[in-house]
Length: 201
Image (tube, rainbow, N blue to C red):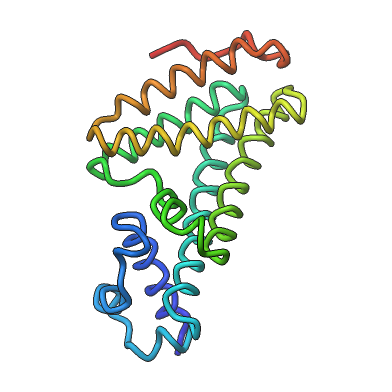
C-alpha cells in the first residue's frame, strides 16, 4: 500500500475531528469519506481509531505551527507579526463559515481527562504553537520567561476566542482578542520594541 492512502485517512480524520470531535467521528465515516479500503486503516493504524486520531492531531498541530510561523516571519516587528497571525486566523475562520480555527479544541476537551495518548498528542501540538510565538517574541526583544508567558496567553486566548466565535457564529470575539493582544504586547515594558506597534484597524 502506498503512503497516499495513509495520508487520505489522516487528512479525513483531521477534518472530521475538527468538525465533530473524537466521539462523534466513527471509523466507518472515516473510511467512507476518505475513499480508502477498510483493510488499509488497520494496516497503517493497528491500534485503530485512537492511533489514527493521534496521527491526525500531530498533522493538524504541524499545520498550525507552520501556518503560524509563516505569518510571523512575514513581519519583523513582533507585535505586528502576532497581529498578522490573528488577522489570518479571522480570515480563515470567516472563510470556513465559522467552523474552523480550532482543530485541537474539541479533541482536547473530550479526551484530556481519560486518554493519555491523545492528551499527549494535543499537548505536543499546543506546545509547538507556544514555542513558535515564544521564538518570535524573544527575537523581538522580550526576555525568555516573559516571551513564553505571553505566548501561552496568546495561544490560550486564540483557543477560547475561537470557541466563543463558533458559538456566536461571529468573528467578534476573535477581533476583540486581536485588539487586546495588541494592547498587551504594546504595553509590556520589558520589550524594547513595545512602543513600535500596529495601530488598531
